[in-house]
Length: 438
Image 1 (cartoon, rainbow, N blue to C red):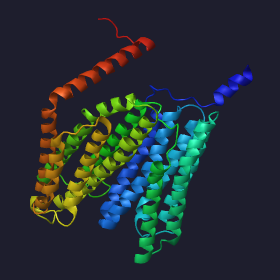
Image 2 (image 1 turned 90 degrees about the vertical axis):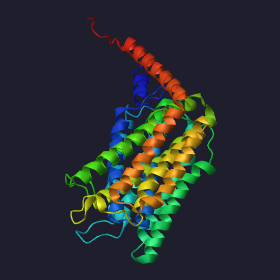
Image 3 (image 1 turned 180 degrees about the horizontal axis):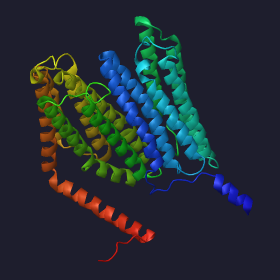
Image 4 (image 1 turned 45 degrees about the vertical axis):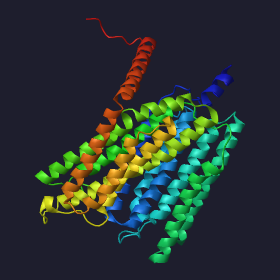
């Protein structure tokens, strides 16, 4: 009897179909606030096409670690037993990899001696993969078929890790070394994300649709939160924005833009998509979780980070004391980054809608076309006007779409509210949580 009790205590607690996100998973996400901010700030420092490519590659690799962690939390209760130790160790390894991002981007700047940033990033990524592989091995004990599935999928991240080490060792200084490093990085991303397509695994699925949808909704909030930080602190890492009318106008426009992007995702699309995921079963659910959430949410997050980068660049122009504030024109590729981030986010969001609910309002296509066409105009405008034009277009597009679909929207939101009330009532009954009678 005692031996059976001890064995039960050491066995993982499987996740239930109605499982929700744990506080430990939210703690893990805090590291990604820092990681996203690092990617944005470093891209702003080394601004250019090469930096944009590096930002996407490093983000995609960090995203694969986040996705694996989310899948683990969907398989077992990650805050119970030894798995919490795996979670803390993984959090530390991801944080170390995020710290190394600036030096992984470019050649090491002069300063105190230390390990190369790209080697530190590769080592951190390796530790994450080993820890997660060990955690999945523990989580699938007693289920050899599930461990076989994990083993198949684990080959791609381990192969990508080897490519990262090769990039760190052979991607030296100069144009040739940079080309080798970036080429191996891109190949690592292709290996990680292509494996899920060319290595179909039978029996793999998402246990809790609500947990999976919530995890991805929360990481969208994390990315939007990073954009709020970028908007508040301005060009650098410190709160250095002067309090001037142009700066206040830019801040007001920026937060309005972010609110519109939040609305576009959370108002009805996230709710409707989760319902579709709940109804899906087996391989259909697994494919839907991969395509609509793992892949398309990566593009949404990248679009938000590009927007944050564009905001930083724009604020640097507006806050420049040597310039005439509102008469500072956006130049170079800045408008393309600012508008491109929003376009990437919206295109990925609309693709998410098509992949889940199989429906797309033609008005959405018009919004994307209009935003794409406005880029040419934006490059000729002052920086503040560039942001105002973008914000106005997104707000009008989002509001117009909500009005066009108001009946369907009202039905979805009323159903969601009724579901929330039922869940809250059931939880109150179970916990005996009742308000005092007045």
